[in-house]
Amino acid sequence: MFEVPAPDFSLDATLASGQTFRWTQHEGWWYGFIGGSVLKVRQELERLLVESSGPSITPDRIRRYFALDVDLSDILRQIDVDMQIHHAILTHRGLRVLRQEPWEVLASFICASFNNIKRIEGMIGALCQGYGPPVSLNGFRGFGFPDAEAIAGLPERRLRSLGLGYRAPYLRATARLVADGKLPFDQLRRVEYGVTKAALLRCDGVGDKVADCVALFGFEQYEAFPVDV
Image (cartoon, rainbow, N blue to C red; front, side, top):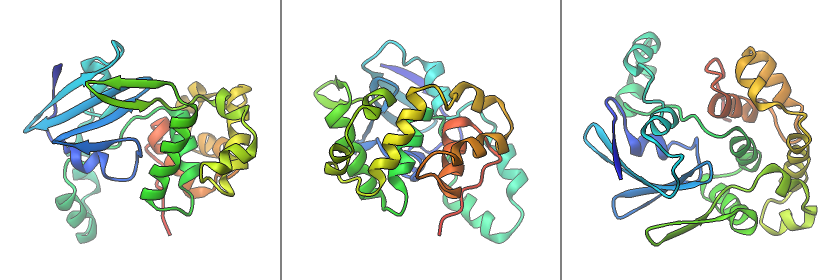
């Protein structure tokens, strides 16, 4: 177990905000996944206590994932321009935009379209349990997120059986794009926001809101502004 300084941060607000669907709370700890590792994380004032199943999870990796290197005060000062935003800042102070794995974000938000968080979590949980690698930590057992190649090779009926419904062919088609190297994730972080969004909009099942969610949460395109119905 190790500690990470976490000033001006709310673990609860961040993980319960709907930008990720693979974290659960149990006995004061959050359990979730970063890459192929399972973690347990707890906040005590301005520090995080972290334990993980894999050596790739370091303090630097945690700081990056939770965007603890970002000057949140400066961002909030710039956007605090009216009473609505001011109220949101007061209510959700410490909420940060996670830096997540692009493929997991893209697949998750295809599942998220016209859906609620409980059902999204159920779909993604079933997908991971069926086709993701098993991982465990201190008695907690879970499954990593299946890679694009694993999803691309599945028949549509298998995905539908997991509760994806009409999203099943969209997810499989997008998985094939990723598996074939036609959606270059590394480049989409480095190009302009409009280029990233245009590439994402070419994926089946991805509209404006999903593209903006994926650009923001998966590619660090902070110009993206998801608008829900």
